[in-house]
Amino acid sequence: MNDIKDLIISKNLSKKYNGQLVVDNFSISIKNGEIFGLLGPNGAGKSTIILMILGLTEPTSGSISVGGFNSTRQPLKVKRITGYLPEKVGFYEDMTAMENLSYTAELNNIPYREIPSKIDEVLDTVSLSKNKKQQVRTFSKGMKQRLGIADVLIKDPRLIIFDELTEGLDVKVANQILQTILDLNASKNITFLLSSHQLNLVQKVCSRVGILSSGKLINQGSVESLGRELFGGGKYRIEIELEKITGKIADKLKKLDKVISVNKTGKKFTIVCDKDIRQGISRLVSNEGILLTRMDMKKDALEEIYLKYFKEE
Amino acid sequence: MRSVLTIYRKELCDHFSSNKFLILLSLIYIAGLSSTYVSLTNIRQAASSLDEHVFLYLFTTKGDILPSFITFIRFFIPIIGIIFGFDAINSEKTSGNLSRVLSQPIYRDSLINSKFLAGITTLGIIIASIVFIISGVGLFSIGVPPTSEEILRISFFIFICIFYGGFWMGLSILFSVIMEKTAASILITTAIWIFLMFFLPIIADAIANAMAPVSDNPTFTELARNYSISSSISRISPATLFSESIIVLLMPIGGNLIINNKAGLVQSYEMLQSGEMQLNHPLSLGQSLVQVWPQLVAIIALAIVCFAVSYIIFMRQEIRST
Image (cartoon, rainbow over all chains, first blue to last red; front, side, top):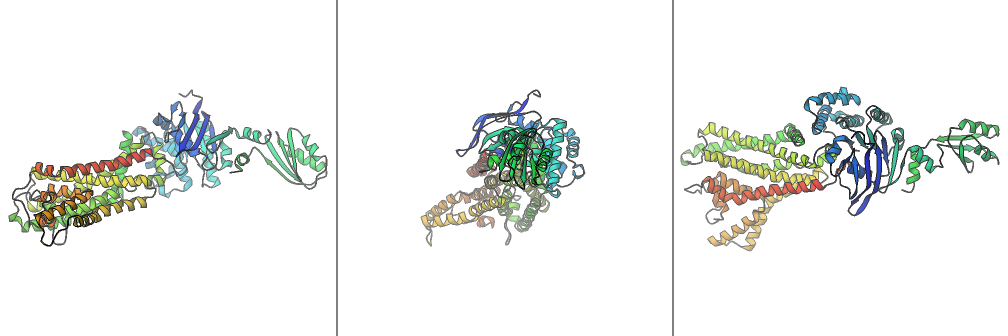
């Protein structure tokens, strides 16, 4: 089973609610050890796809499997290897962190004698060892999210699904959690499926993203490849604003190394290139005796890619 | 199977450690022991005239102010059932636990089955414990041990109480599955309880009086017809079915008259309780069970139907974290 290259395979997955199509022919393969981001506005069908992966809702047509197990026909086997942290993670507030994790461990049929050491291990991973005897009601939102990660780790999953993991967290805590994801991915080769609106955070960790609109997967690939596809093939986009324009400046910019295209809008230029050429640009502009008033560089910003797709929504 | 046991054990712990359990237990103990004190006083006063089934009088004798234990229990069981079920599912949803728990390798029905079983167990423990306490106090005070028939009657009483509570628990779980908010589920279930317990008998009487009026000097036929209509309508309510069953079971002397529509002979349950009306030959346990068999079956069926409906709805429901 570990030889299976693609951990999640979805083929023509569709789901109708009350006659309305919420997931439309969703086909995707997510590889073992990959960190995949599922992006899309509210109502795009992300949560429905996650529920179908877990076997918590049945597809109207098509199929989805995790680790070779069909989610509809073998939901228990799928849930045994999949950890899921919902958007609104809940714990039994009167119980301690340890008791909550022990409950999850028992539901996962982990032998009783192994549970205490397992709890210590996962709490250590999320740096909550000191709080294990504390009631969950005293936990902050960030601590609850970390406990959520511990909760999914207790079953040694091959796949972890996070639904809006960093929603409502401050940047520091969100970054800590993302670092935990990267560490787990590197150390245990766990596959992650992240659904998030915080695109800059997704960009930091995802090796590939899928963009979902009205239940349809409209594009997928690495952030870099999506950026190239949308913005003319270049890896970098440099925007400059000049005090004045001379006739030859555009031509000279085009002749710089690795420049793919130069677009002019008033006193602004957008340069698409495959290399960071900011030094070259400032030298050129300075040699021309023109004052450079602004220069920004964007490296395949996922937010821009996202906005490009959803600017009308 | 382990998942059912795990959830069952956790739910049981939750019930036993909850404040609502302690409050309900205290209330029912206070009510039960108060009514026992009254019944013991009355039993001592009328000791010479009570020859058979003395032990059962502990549960059925009322005082001047306080009602009997079975009246208290008729009132408290629905409350216990409702309180242990009204937030069973929707609180899990709103707290975000439902999707987390169901994403574990367990069948979805393990959750609702375990919750129902844990609720029924808690209810059974509350009822059985107060019945045993009353029996113990009674045994110590009146010095007459229960006969085997009385023990069986009390066992059947506990059994009926559990199913009656099961109906109310099933109903409140049903609304906890349907309604998003716990406040809504408890309000609806309480409204149904109030209607079935207090308003339905009034409506039944009004309909009976309209359909079969009783004159100032009623004939046996008039009374019987009026009573027949009234009791038939009242039997829609599980509270009526429960009252009838336990009266017949715990009052072998004359209890059956109430449910046999002998309206001309028995005007009210109070007459039996006050000892104004008795039969010379009490019913045997077998005869009592035959008398209340339809009521028993109806209570059990209602409890099963209520739970089955909530089960089906829960199994078909979408599980979302928000």
